[in-house]
Length: 173
Ligand SMILES: Cc1cc2nc3c(=O)[nH]c(=O)nc-3n(C[C@H](O)[C@H](O)[C@H](O)COP(=O)(O)O)c2cc1C
Image 1 (tube, protein in one colour):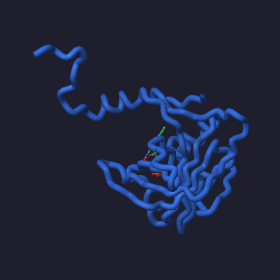
Image 2: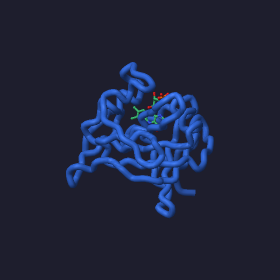
Image 3: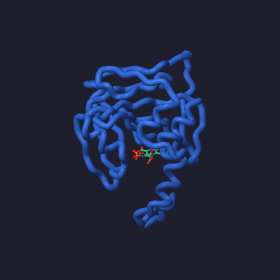
Image 4: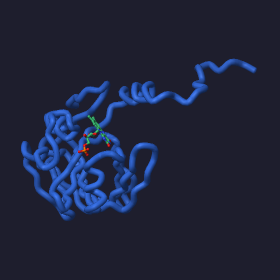
């Protein structure tokens, strides 16, 4: 039997090399918001993907210990706000890197709403207003499936700059 040309990984990778590999994959950065009985909540997320356009459907993977997750599940609504290149501060605030929690995270920007009432970031390059239609637990996270019931955001320039996360750093592209 001939040796494979490329080395074949024989063991299931540990978490650290998996995270290192994922750190080389550039991803868009979003703030996922919601509105519950106690007010607004939100977190920074890059585990966001389009699922279908018929009907328009998206997913976001949220850690089960996230405080925002409980609010989304109570309200059944969320909005995915895709960040512009100059919204690095917002990404850090909603990732709990500035010591700002809960409603106070919303203080530095302008917000509106679409049909669900979830906060829509005025400077977002796109915003996907969603009703939660399904949730699935996988490993440490809960995959939230949202039917998109409204679109928003301020695209501004014809080619707006987006915020990406790569090599554990934010970059405007
Ligand atoms: C670039 C970046 C991307 C992130 N993506 C996710 C994500 O997709 N899902 C998630 O649950 N947490 C993600 N986080 C971590 C959350 O933003 C962080 O845990 C936050 O503090 C959760 O806030 P909460 O507990 O108030 O909901 C990300 C953080 C950063 C910096």
